[in-house]
Amino acid sequence: MLNFGMVKNVLITLFLFFNIFGFHGQISEGFNIRLKSGFLAAHRGVLSHLPKQTALATELSYYRRLKDGKSWARHFNYPTVGAALFFGSVGNNEVLGRYTALYGFADIPILLKKHFEINWRLGSGLGYTNRVYDPILN
Image (cartoon, rainbow, N blue to C red; front, side, top):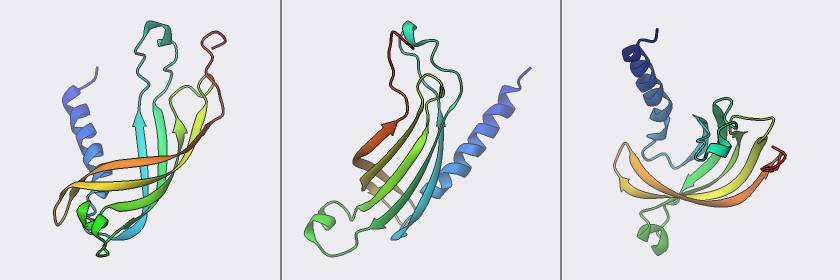
């Protein structure tokens, strides 16, 4: 039987451990690796057979904080811009496949403090998947 108190403590510890790297404060340039996990939410009954495993993804990114005196950068609170390579699966590789994406982004600070910040990320790019979902064949 699961001890939910212990599970909760482990999940909180993992959350803090993996998210502490996001509190980079005033680092102006660098590389970042993010490991992500989640699940495919079967929001309709006809999709209930699709989720098989945990959805896993990895994001590799290069970023640079704009610190020059240009008026637009100052107006947006000196955003961070960069590019990312994103790859993973949604939890059912046989039916839904794996995906890869390459995109550019801008992290616009909403709250900027000395040792942490809260950002709004705006990005756009290209994506590829090795499977096409067909509601009849799948």
